[in-house]
Amino acid sequence: MEGVNTVEEQLTIAKQKAGLSRIPDENVEIQRFTVARYKQND
Image (spheres, rainbow, N blue to C red):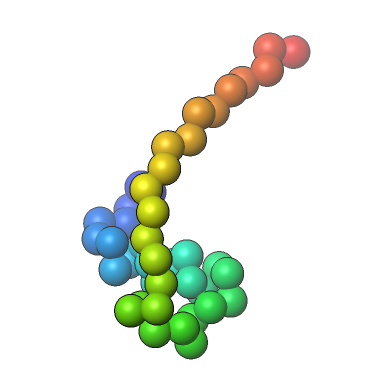
């Protein structure tokens, strides 16, 4: 994610967006994935 430099920052942001800020980090499982973006020509 652009502007996010550490795993800790990314985890904090993701937890906030999901409404899980109160969940301790040690109870969170981190997985890596990739995203393919497609653009439709109009």
